Image 1 (tube, rainbow, N blue to C red):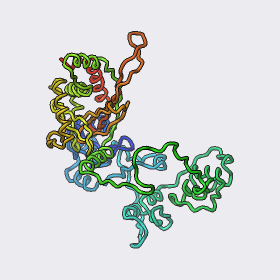
Image 2 (spheres, rainbow, N blue to C red):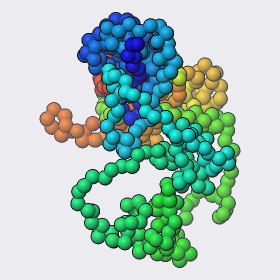
Image 3 (spheres, helix red, strand yellow):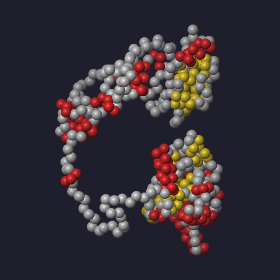
Image 4 (spheres, rainbow, N blue to C red):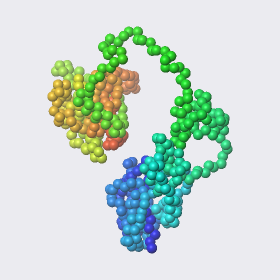
Length: 492
């Protein structure tokens, strides 16, 4: 009879719950040597090589290339290199496999050495004795998950004090009770004198003990509300009297000069219903901020060269594109060079676009809307200026068509005209990034080994970390800064 062993999805890191079999490096039935690479396993961060711990062979590969499997799930059957198990033996082994608990081990469990069968290259140890059969009353105050675990592991719940609502026994309570007692090593006794000898036996958190000493609270008179009746901070603070009653608190002094704007009568509030646009904004941005992992890349950019070009255009024609028009043009060119930023995120798919369709934030009396300058990488600064003015006018008069404000692959939000130095914008889903632009301010900088002044704009790029990595976003910002500080590249 062949000595069959499980080759399960390994676990790297406490947060890993699943992995992808990127490649099998050995074929089914092909012998391998100790140290050979057996498979490439991808996690959400890296690709790991799984090496053979001993000579062996895979009589059966269960996992498909590119498939995703939970930690502990059987992905292959392992045996010795010179063994030839029958198909029935392999089928019986697969049918009888039960994955181990893949949850992070407790400190007590980590302190114990793993069993001899923990490595896939080790001989299978003799099976442990079955857990004792326990009977749990149907009306027991226990959660379904805790009941199932207790029956599976044979845990007697009679002596378990539930930490859930109304003393309900939770899964954590049963798991804690199932752990073996932890043997405490030697060492000198801990002196608790600084916080009081009387607290040494109190079942309380360290913070609760410290607060009890500070506020002279008797812990023996408290009933803990924490797990297993542990006294926590809230229990101690409930016995602490405020130094000054709220009624006796001094009132805040009235302002010397009343505000000039109109406001509601004291004790009342004006209720304003959200417009459909405001509801849509609230829904989209709440979803964005709560579900998209934002990160921010900030840079200071000189715009003196752009100011010079605008002054020349103003003198020649009487009008000139805005600073924002130049920035939109620069973003279009930068997105063309960095297509990994010119993206939308749809579930587990990233849509990369060949055209830089940039949404420009426009404030209206009904709320913020983002009309789209399509193909900004192919338009001149003057053409972008005309397009932005036309779209902004449509936005303020409510004449935008759906295709003029829905979609887009990138956004620009500029609050510089309001005197805002710097801010971070919320990503406009499903787009992958948005650029926030502040006001230009004169700042001292080093110019040619001498102190000089330049007009600096602070920019912040908000990125969706699901699709854009830090290095990709940083490279985009470097290109964008170079284009803005040398605007001849924008007019080429």
